[in-house]
Structure formats: structure tokens, C-alpha cells
Image 1 (cartoon, rainbow, N blue to C red):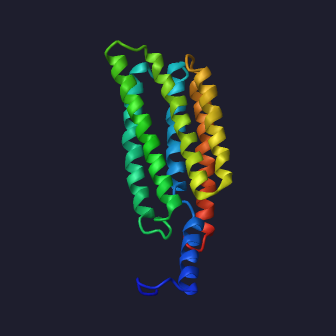
Image 2 (cartoon, rainbow, N blue to C red):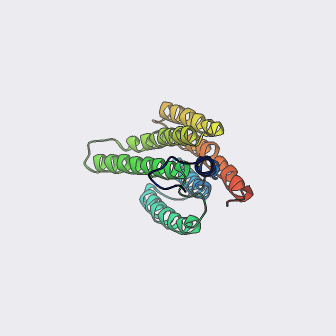
Length: 210
């Protein structure tokens, strides 16, 4: 590189341009997290649906242990997966940093809504049906996360899962007062999160930087 008191040479500019390009082209590393959370969440949502509709030989008392186990198992799995990407090339690219930030923010938002609804129900201020609203709210957060990553990474294909998530949020909200919100959300998660996660993992494996 040239000294600080001189203008950068053509070689310097070419190097910086190539560096920026490599960052933009770095594969997104969130695929394994998408697969993990979408798969686990879909299973838990369907289990919840089976319990409340009487299709599973369990009572409503099983719901809290189900979701608490989900939080513990899901968080532990995320920690393990985080170790697997810690030293991956391209992890510090703008797209990957944005992906990590927006999905963590979306998760935090869903967690806050859950705590608020749980507190309201326990205090007698909300009807338990408000728990159903958390599902379309989560899908709306996922759609926002996908749109943000698509814009920053310039990967137009990521707008597709964003649209699926938003459609699922709308359909789920329309059915929020019924048990149908659960299979609708599970289906939307598979289309908007698990399948894109599989594509991201495939792209990561094919990339020479992975």
C-alpha cells in the first residue's frame, strides 16, 4: 500500500475493489441456524397444535414444558452451531454481519412479545388466545429480516422467503383466534426459513471460500 501522505495507486484501488467484491460475494453463513430453528420450531408448533386439538394424548399442562424445553434445546443448539462458523472465511462481510444482527434482533423481538403476552395472561389482563398472535408476529419479523439481508447482500432471491413469511403472517393473523394458526405458521416456516436455509448451506459448501 502507498504511504498515507500520497494518493493511492491503481494497484491499491484494484486491491481494495477486489477485497470489497470478495466480501459481497462471501456466502451467507446463517443457513445452518435457519434449518435448526425452523425445523425445531415447526415440530414444536405442530406438537402444540396436536395437544390443543386433542390429537395428542396430553393435556394443556404439557404446553409450558414443551415450550420451555424448546427454548433450552434451541439455544443450546445455536451455541454449538455458532462454534462451527466461528472461523469461517467471509464471516466478517457486511452481508454476514447484517444477517447476524437482524436475525438476532428479530429473535429478541419475538422473545419480548412472548414475555409480554405470558405476563399479561398470568396477570389476568389477556386471554390465552393472545399467545396465538406471537406466531404471525414472528413471521412478520422474519420477513423483515429477509428483506434487510436481501437488500444489503444484493441477493434478490432472498426476497422470496420474505414474501412467504409476510404472507404467512397475514394468513396466521387472520386465523389467530383459531387453532389453524399453528399449521399455517409451521408451513410458512418451512417455506420461508428451512428451505432457504438448505439453499444457503448448499451455496456455502460450493463456495471456494467456505
